[in-house]
Length: 346
Ligand code: F6P
Image (cartoon, rainbow, N blue to C red):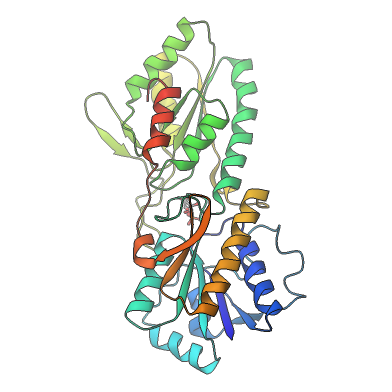
């Protein structure tokens, strides 16, 4: 069997571990693997990287993706026929497509409409792919954000400041809630909960009345700025969308810090963690999850289980149809309940 493996959408820690695990599994069984460069663009252009023992050496723990990635969409670019021709010409029997929720939708379409034998592997720091409890990349991002919050605690305390920490996560608050809890923050603002600016200001003032001189507020980039009079505002750095058509997010931290400073009179600062959360080496947890996903994807290719995504459900590696994966997974009820309990003004 000859497998093609590609990475699509944004990068995240653990992509290389999946490539490593797929290749190891295939080579151990005398199967062949080719790496497809820059996502689906590389399949349309037949832009490949041979994957063998030498090329995967040391890959397990490295960040990013050795294959490169892109937001190239086969149908949008009118490239589906070229993709099918490449697979035919190069004898690719199965395609392992590692990506986020949008990449799973691409996989669903090319499998259902065009008969491409594809298996999805869910990645993203956002942890927002439906049908899997966790995606790899998330644990590393949460660890990075938690480390940042730990550092911000001491400087906030020294200066009696309100420190607003803006984290990524697109339209889901997973990174925000997990890092806020792990870092011992005082409040969290996420898309799933409509916390008002006034409630946050009152929470900060109440902390001060109780003798606390500083506060840490974690805000998810996709949260809306909600005011007591019902006004809601999605903050975007520029009014643009990305290659997949989603709004580019970022900037709510600075606006929120200013609003809180105006309302409370306490000095406020913002720290935007941005792509630092996506970079660097994956945690051990992410390496393990990515490795398990890679082995499972190879096994599914061998068994001809196409049109499905590898998933982590209740501590078991399983798989689900791609159509069940291709939608955003918001923060679940149990996690929201924890946030409400710990952060009284959520
Ligand atoms: O989906 C991962 C993510 O890092 C989001 O959290 C963020 O909104 C987005 O990608 C940033 O995308 P880009 O790398 O295109 O700026």
